[in-house]
Picture 1 (cartoon, rainbow, N blue to C red):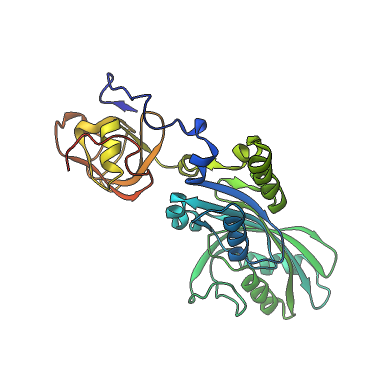
Picture 2: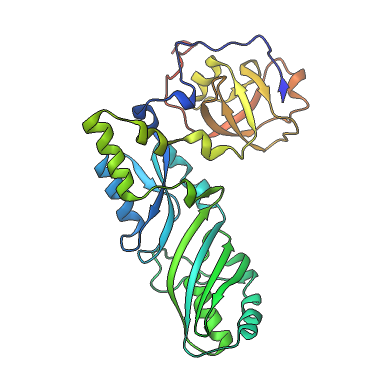
Length: 318
């Protein structure tokens, strides 16, 4: 980290350290890791959660077909602006396949190896998403258990991979029908089912908060938006700069407190306050090495503003 203004201070009167946010503040921009059960669609689950909690905006990141279960991130308020980022996360799946006839394990392993790496992955007709032919990277396709006709597998793959298509293609290679019987998603990016809660647990936590005044469960369930952006290098900004950035203004050199090293022009970064609050995702206009020698000029340009306007007071006149 390169410190550019060691004397900079943040006002205790404005903003909030992410870990100190109230439930109301979190619901304005947070994410929930839900363990979706088989049956409802991803859209139905997010609509249920939105209506149950009386929220204006809540969506999901990463579609699971109705019959599938597993990790489904829900995004509330301004966090919905990060839907595109979540959709690019690599995924893992547990998939149970049923074969039309009994096959030797080594024959199956040979054909599974042909479906790893970069492969064509055409959406099945019953998919919840309609897209064109494309390639996807399958990094792992491993056997966990096999009893002669039923095959339990572990899959690690690029976002947007259709496991039903993998079942179809495996059947073509083995010259026998292959049915996808069960599908469960244990992880999406850095998040896993170990961090998730069920729909019932979400409903119970909300009831405890609203009806009994006990918000402890809700505080454990609602994750601050910053936790979703831990992979991005950070640029720390002053309070006045945060106010301007929340209105979409570029980050200028006088507003910078510190920057990560080795940033180049065009690098994607997270602009944060001195309290650690996400202000915006931005593209660097300069590289790290030249910024310490600058007195003025543009350092970065926001492409996704995450902070509510006027969280910090304006230091300029309209």
